[in-house]
Image (tube, rainbow over all chains, first blue to last red; front, side, top):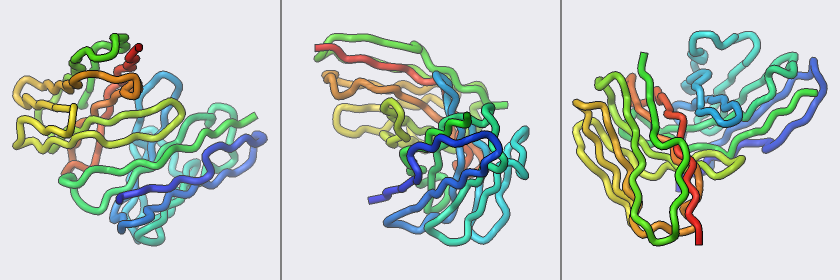
Amino acid sequence: GAVVSQHPSRVICKSGTSVKIECRSLDFQATTMFWYRQFPKQSLMLMATSNEGSKATYEQGVEKDKFLINHASLTLSTLTVTSAHPEDSSFYICSASGGLGDQPQHFGDGTRLSIL
Amino acid sequence: KQEVTQIPAALSVPEGENLVLNCSFTDSAIYNLQWFRQDPGKGLTSLLLIQSSQREQTSGRLNASLDKSSGRSTLYIAASQPGDSATYLCAVGTGGGNKLTFGTGTQLKVEL
């Protein structure tokens, strides 16, 4: 149980393109979803937290107009990287939780984004 | 600001060895602590979750301990196997447990 599906797994596109990444909880209702970014050989950095039906809460230093997050249902959140540039190339991972911190976050397999 | 450190950064051991991975955090006001496994190019798999009121959790060959007052956690892996090779991350949960601050990970290689 507690499967999180993230799609696509890999994206290669030209600079200036907007890219949408989907995160779905397949067998549970995700009250809260999280988006992380991971640079090579580094750990995960939380970008934003989204609760179903509410606006996302962004971490300091993360541009909300650059990284658009939508959490329209209890099973789907999307991250759109708008007008992507090479410096946005990274590994993006989502996670989902069905409740408060007494329940673990379940992670997707990540999306490798490469901007040429 | 919470900072999480993992030592060692990399570890190579022969198969069958028992090993300990270390995690330390600067702010003891945590809600929980989780250990994860990450395979190359993949997402994270949750291994163990310890609430702040608990001292340890066990799952199979894995045992995680938590000493909140000293800001430390250890992950003990018994009888290591090549399939255990991965990067192990600890993450401290604050803000009701939903906000995770990750360590930099320990890259483990178990050799035949």
